[in-house]
Amino acid sequence: MNTPRKALVVGSGSIGRRHLANFRLLLPDAEVACVSSSGRPLADSETVATTRFPSLAAAIAWEPDLAVVASPAPLHLDHACPLLDAGVPVLIEKPLSDSLDRVHEAAPLLARHRDRIEVAYNLRFLSSARRMKTLIDESRAGRILSLRIEVGQYLPDWRPQADYRRQVSANRSLGGGVLLELSHELDYLTWMFGCFDRVFCVTANSGQLEIDVDDSADILLSRDGLTAQVHLDFLQRCASRSCKLVGSAGTLHWDLIANCITFDSPSGEEVLFSDPNLDRNDMYVEQLRGFIEVATGRAAPRITLDDGLAVLDLVEAMRESAATGRQIPLPFGVRGASL
Image (cartoon, rainbow, N blue to C red):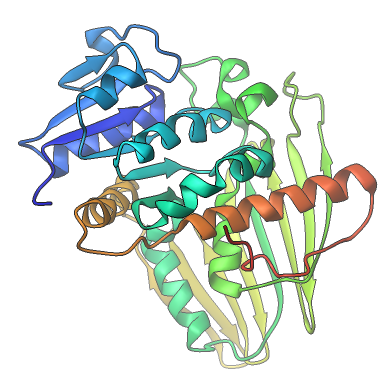
């Protein structure tokens, strides 16, 4: 396939609108279409799409060259599978789904089309994330001894113009809650640091936000010689997103909001990376640019179906741990998930 002429986005929420705008940026001569995840009619003011469809079936009949599925997580595979069955490459917003059961039901079709699927864990395209991955691969801090990962932001501040209680993040039926909504941290944990053998998780609903999902989680993962602590919440009034890596040669501090990395050692503190003026949309643009390469057959998926499945496998183990109060073994490691 040459340059795509028809691009489709399923979902008209904030992330769907971002993908539409970025398609217009990267494919200025293409038709860019949108269909609401619920199938409701879309007004002109709601979208920058050049074409709007009343249903997914109508959108598929239009024969798009590629598609982004940006609907609520419980609907991801309901929307992705018909597109894949029609031969349309698909970028599925994170998480892959809201449950492993849905993935297993669709497993034969997903496995057949794995080279046409990417999962949208866009945090991997943050400039400081790439640098952090390189530093880890180069053993800049020596042998890794412990990890502390944290992300927290007050949910009402995510989209101040909307009632947060009606958003996906706040609703169990839409796949909300911290484990799925903040699963970027789980993806980069496994991408950067590999497999873990055991997980223990405690989740809570503080009651502060008047929502029906967990608004915080504390997670402990381990393997021989390494422990990782992960904290996720919707509660912190001052946003925080960081990773602290304690190594045998020193400590790496990665601040994802400031987009910088420092290294503390007996020699003092050293700034290894700093790019505070980054446009955050660059992550999404780079992700979409790469997906266009996948859709046109010029590249293999960078964030694969198995990557998305590995995160969901880990989330399911965390849910089991939170429900039972037990440590849950991960016998194949979180990178062992496969269809």
